[in-house]
Length: 336
Image (cartoon, rainbow, N blue to C red; front, side, top):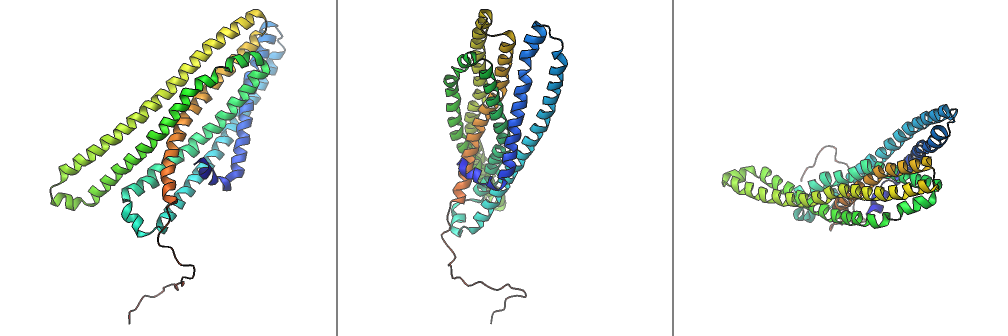
């Protein structure tokens, strides 16, 4: 599924590459700012080297300017690519619908088609604009911080991250469940849209036979089914963030114990420990974003499957290769 979506980004690959480079620069600047903590604590506060204070201050200002410029460039270009991809998918879907045979429109209701063109593509839009920007920036930030922590003290960092794979298993399971519930939710909102379209377009018939309350009950049943699916998705989504927070608290407690004993034993300096701890805290925010993105990706893939189902539908009536091209009608048609 992601390959089909990424195929639409191919015409904009130059902007995407520039955005990725800007994201890597942004991550490097963030790591550089955190790395200033170690010399500030060990050399300035402990060793009393006052001459390093202006050097560290100027370097922080320079890194701040780089963070501002790279962050703007990365976010803008990724959103440009994302909105372009969504525009192309929507136009291709609309064009493909017009190529389908009449039996397709007899089989598929207007409400379902409108739901896929509007609601489902909106889910894909959120993925390739907001979530894609967060994904790229969070990925490079985590990678940069990991490289910094392992470079500072690889033994301590290795012990700190040893528990990460075990703690990540529940998050992956939640993502799979969210994908299933998201697809169910998109199907239900399509049913609600179709029911509303039928009732409004056939309002004269409904009123002529006094079926107002019957239609209200039908709509209420569909709305409750949609509500039930939404609440199942809400339970999964609501559990995602607290689970990441719990993992962060457990990991933080373990890291404090390990780091405290290593500082007391003299195997790591206070400045190094502080820099590593700040790096691990800084990793928490992009890791939480990745958890949310994982949920949104599964939701968007469920919607994308419904969109590409229509785009993969072949028309039963195909124009012959030797079909006669009719001339352009400029005045009118006369029957003899």
